[in-house]
Length: 62
Image (cartoon, rainbow, N blue to C red; front, side):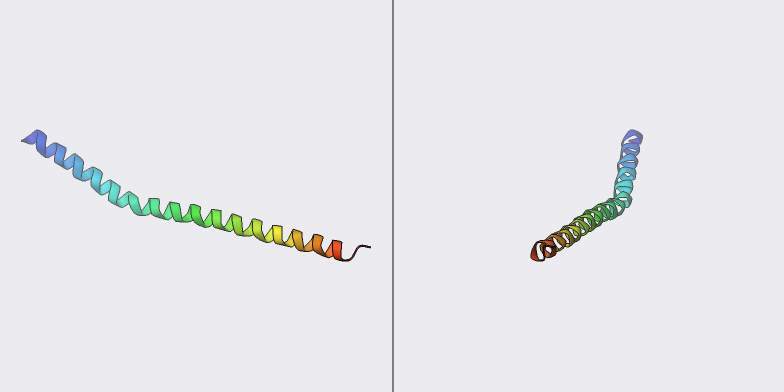
């Protein structure tokens, strides 16, 4: 029975670690998603600025 109790304690300990670690993983995933979204947004803005610049250049050749 002692062996069973130790296994149960180890199982519960793993569950507690998993439960405590889960929010950290969720936060980490959210941070990665935000960083990726920010990168895509910045890239899109730079691309838009670049296209606007070339559009002005082609509209007014000097």
